[in-house]
Image (cartoon, rainbow, N blue to C red):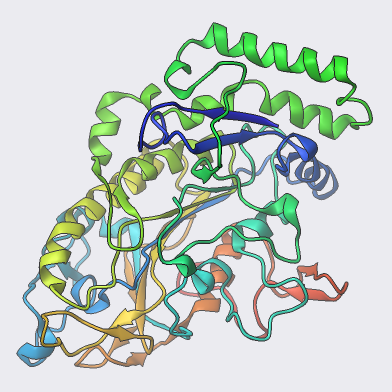
Length: 445
């Protein structure tokens, strides 16, 4: 296994915490999935595809009626403090604290009638599309694991599924667990925690820019592997995967300090401080996600901030909305400018919405009956709202959109037919990606 560690404290990406690591490898060299993906590419003929998904998980449940579905005609205890502003699409208005998104709404899809939430403070449904009840043998896989199983690129310098999320205090927010697809399809996590500190032949993150020394260390690792016999028995696919992953290009993709400073400034910083019992508000994760899909990753997930605002809803929104607005807008614009928008789908959402009525602490409580999602890119028909809620924002009024319809759309954008493709569970039974009857959103495909 190749591990890269940093000796500095509590930083991300190019300054990772001492107990955070980057695992680079395949099969016995770290459990990445390239060998199987290379076989899949050869068998399916999809080697030229670069399709990918970036999922931004907003742990805690963002206030849907304060973002893209403001209720200006509702009573004051429902309506809240914010005003709507016009966007660059006629007849679409969103929150005044999301002005950057307003300027690129023609590149977005606002799903305002998302239903089917299981009402749990957990990432499970956002990551799998399913309820955690009555799971098949081995448990439902996350979409990233499914894409790892089904898709791959032999020229990729990244594992298929990358999870950028840190370990969060509220355990159900965390994801990246094994399922019936097995260990080889668990995500690569550059924020994984270990009990000790290790280095790759003396190389730490702050020395990554010393390209010559880095390559020397990889060469030394290869020689040691050869001499120990650990390379024996690897077939051509394994050798190809090992060669790609030991090239150092994955490490370069993870090092955002190599990015143009003007681009980094566009994404903004946010804050490294953890929010509530969830995640920091790290805007550079959005940039890192773009760099990883550009390098070949099929699925990149990240967790952004903390949205469980039972108190001070509007104060917290004014703290969070501007950073989110800057990061998500920079990502969408960046994908368009770099020619990645057709093949990379972006989704931002949480596990449920918030109550229409504002409570005595100026907050909104849990509301699983309706919530929202933001979609962009992926070759979709954008510049639209799908679905509406009633006057109070408590029920889907027309065109309710189920979580599984979103998943069917994400798979469709990856070139996967959810009515035909199955995966075997631990009992050998074929399992469809979504339940019967749920199809991609006709409004966007």
